[in-house]
Structures are given as structure tokens and as C-alpha cells.
Length: 75
Image 1 (cartoon, rainbow, N blue to C red):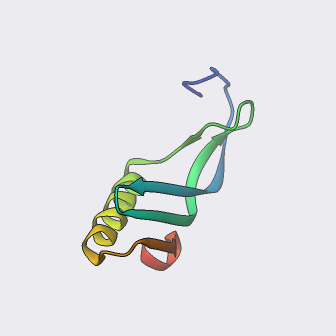
Image 2 (tube, rainbow, N blue to C red):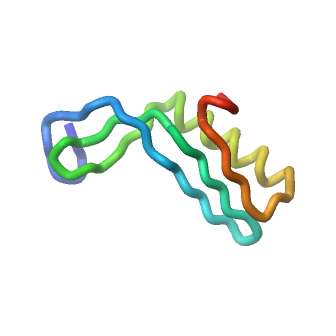
């Protein structure tokens, strides 16, 4: 169930996740998610959320100004 619109149907999908930090922007493509068919709100599983956090932490250490990557490539 969607916590935003209370829609009852979520489908498997992918999305692009963008994180903007003070000195770095991180774009992660093809991130698996569940998407509400009614409003389009997207949700990540705990496993995906943890992987996204790892990607962000690694990007911070790399000191890149811009990082564009594919979720499947780094997961």
C-alpha cells in the first residue's frame, strides 16, 4: 500500500536516484524499486537502501564532483 496516496497496487520498477551533496552530485540509474500505479511514488527495499548508502559513501571518499553510475554495476 502506498503511504502517500493510499493506493493499493505497487509494481516492480526501476528509477534514477539522485543525491546532491555540498561538493558532489551522485546519479544512480536503474535502481530497483516498487512504484505506486496510482501516484508514481517509489519505495526502496531495505537491501536497496543499504546499497544506495554504500554507493553514496564510496562516492564521498572518491572526491568526485559528479558521479554517474548504474545500480547493477556497483551492486
